Amino acid sequence: MAPHSHFFAALSILLSLLACSANAQLTPTFYDRSCPKLQTIVRNAMVQTIKKEARMGASILRLFFHDCFVNGCDGSILLDDIGTTFVGEKNAAPNKNSARGFEVIDTIKTNVEASCNNTVSCADILALATRDGINLLGGPTWQVPLGRRDARTASQRKANTEIPSPSSDLSTLISMFSAKGLSARDLTVLSGGHTIGQAECQFFRSRVNNETNIDAAFAASRKTNCPASGGGDTNLAPLETLTPTKFENNYYRDLVARKGLLHSDQVLFNGGSQDALVKSYAANNAAFFRDFAAAMVKMSKISPLTGTNGEIRKNCRVVN
Image (cartoon, rainbow, N blue to C red):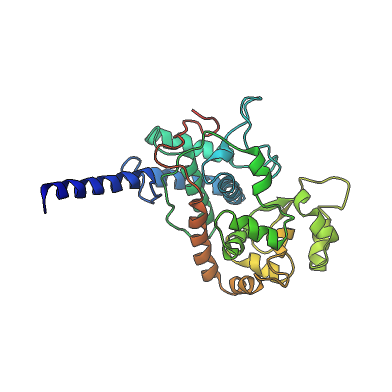
């Protein structure tokens, strides 16, 4: 090969490497050298968190979901409002007075900073804490792709319009998930995250008081804590009737029995396109776990900030 051919070959390889660096892909090994104790630190904190309050596993999962659906998984949901100078997502309708778990992420961030400062993003901490919370409640585990950086901005407007509502119909849910690169199958398996956690009366009042595709005894029991009128907006009920602090496939059994708490749950099993998949997950916990883990990895890759985009926040609640 002529000398100039060697030069152009080397230049081509260098440009390829630079392109890969600029479009850095997330990888589970991202912090193996820069913060080798990261996963242990997060896991230990989540063990203590779940021991104190099992529901927090569901709360962290919800934080992650609401983060990823607004400009990607970039930690923007963690940012506090600062007077009129910075408006975050915490006071958007889907989050106000219901999003919780911020203190858990703060604690983990403090612990991580003590081990390797200015290295690990809040977005990655949230992704790891979500995985560990689910696993500690009996759910699957998976390798979390890492290397996200933190957003310097947030969007209350997008939080209000791009996070699916508990009153959404199936066609709306499929469309909103599709807009994020997620399939109808992803929608149905990720909704299985509602096998843990609780919901406020304001999100299921219409379902238990007005809808007909609902088990009568189940509706009556929920009405006692969520009347058609007269307050009680923040009264809680478990999203799944059988084992609401254990992650498994009973959520789908509830749907088949017409005991979905939210309208957006029951539409997955109501004579539509997802009925067969709901039945299959109700009968096969292993299939649910396998598909849930894969869908969580897929969701975690929505529009991450990588390379020199964004920042590594020192405090998850404010930009540097």
